[in-house]
Amino acid sequence: MIGEWLASRGNRERVIIATKVSGHPAFPGLTADNITAGAERSLKRLRTDHLDVYYAHVDDPATPLEETVAAFDRLVQRGLVRHVALSNYTADRVQEWVDVAHDLGAAPPVSLQPHYNLLARTGFERDLRPVAERNDLGVLPYSGLASGFLTGKYRSAADAAGTARGALLGDYLTGAGFAVVRELEAVASELEAEPATVALAWLRSRPTVVAPIASVSAVDQLDALLASASLELTPAQDERLTTASDSFAAALT
Image (cartoon, rainbow, N blue to C red; front, top):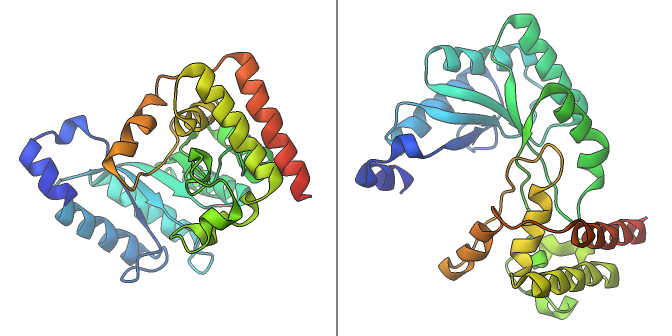
């Protein structure tokens, strides 16, 4: 579908395309063959001659990192991939990848895609952000809206029961979690914005973050996401949200 859209619009050079390899049933893991085949199949489906960003979706400890890094680099050298990136890697493994790329003279990763939002901060801020800062990695956190919880659509645990994403909400459905949503709604009211817009604006303003990732289930939800690219919080508003988030984290311990 994306390939058809690109072809009909003729806008390939105005679009940044990223895709991943490692978790696809047909190409599991990060062997050299899987990395190459995954890229070539994506290029065919997308009707393009290059991928702007190619992610290692999840670590594959069973494959030597030297093999994986070299395979990504060969795609860069062939012009099929412009940039290498990592997703769902531990801080130690991110640094190891960077070091192996340096030793091999291979293309280094340029971005990192971790789980990070107002309700999921500790793992990234404590472990991954220092690695991103040290290696100049742009961070594109996924689950920016905490599986929809930060849109304010859930007012109680009962609201999530039986929904498509209910099982993903887990610890969010607590008094401390709903307190974060109430603070989001208060700030959103002050700014005449949607809670989702504010949640993503907070995330966008974090150190190393270049753009948060979020999705919609209906077209009419898209405007709130796009508005987050330009919304600026005041220092006081930022601090209120961060404090509510800190209280949520403390309640988990």
